[in-house]
Image (cartoon, helix red, strand yellow):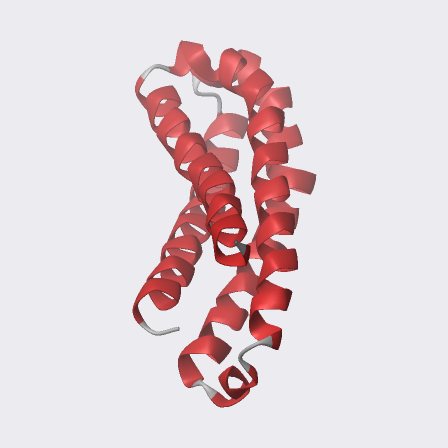
Length: 143
């Protein structure tokens, strides 16, 4: 049952990340959708954080039954990637999302402010995506 809860948390979190990435790709192709994305982003962000909380809570209980994982290189790497996901997630929530919301109305005009911000957002978004994929791969294949 605990593993099922853990998987549901992963589906919530990773589903939110993939949805966000897909929608940002759409916004890149159709800049007029930026205003809509700016309204949906906080909802998806909440979904991701709920998923992370479920993952973290269930992960602690799962880990208690597997103390040998403390010395497992893949598990240590997974924990490092999870820390990166959390730090980057805070950055996305504290800086990227509010800034995106403030720039959404001028997104289609591709102003210099939008283009400069877009570069930072793309790096942070790519880091998030790659980190999450790494966590999933390590979880499925090695732990």
